[in-house]
Image (cartoon, rainbow, N blue to C red; front, side, top):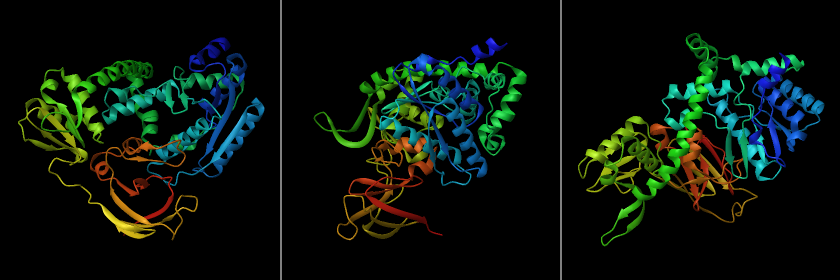
Length: 446
């Protein structure tokens, strides 16, 4: 039995290379404790340097501090260097899990960008994979969503690796019990207010009554979907270069610069439906929109069967227009529509109000301008394609589109999401901490 349990906790060590400096993310829970112990025991064999990292979000008061103390004791006993970050999420309930996740990943990005580590290993298991895939199914994900948790995610100057995706949570706990290794239980994992907990404690147990291997089946679905997406990504890159264009055509040939995105509707109509949908979603993303199935089908029908001059306003403020040969997409730009949120301007440093917000803006003492010595104009507007923002705890500027995807902002809220620009730089973004040479204090107006 002992050998079987040890084999059950088989790590995918192919994700790690000799000479790597690896940070193992340890919360104190069974999965992360098992990964930390296993990597500590095999570090010399694998030829890796090991560092443990722990974030204390302080969400559970004394319980969070006890988790940190437990992790410190574990790292000391294993002889592993430990780094701890104490940082709250700034949220009470809704969105707290995603905010905590963004903070953790931001810190890990900093460690990798600074060259402290080359990779961060997380203890996601087969159960986590199954829960993720089921959650994506419930939300109506496309194929890429069903790919679930990826074994490797490249992150700028490093990577996130998940060596335990093939291991069941029950196997992990049995392995720890056999060794007499304790772990911490997170009380929030039992709270049914979180969707993942309801999937874990209610839905999956019910599905297992129908098929005891349902978790393994969901993990296989994820593996199949990742393979499919790897193929389609390369194929879409090839087709996008041939059929998707930016700007508007001009008399005599060529295209004028602009923010609209267009597809060759005639050639698109001759492609299989699966390819049409993927190309249309690619084009919509280039316009700064994330579209659902209904919006994709509306674009597809307009492209393949619509008449020149027809327009559709889709979810998220995306406008689609059919011309004689093209389907053009944009957030109302160049398509005869007006901006969903008119821009509001005011002088800075100073105070201004826009779209239900009051702003106080002054120069950061560490920035390139000094309060009272240099000024400018702030523009509060809806975000647009191409906008980039530098978030706190981030290694570099990120596309606003990608940030909104991580924040799970969609629909009309997404199209109207506000940013503040000063001198071509995004210095404030709704719902996100931004790094810039300006300090912006924003509060909602009652």
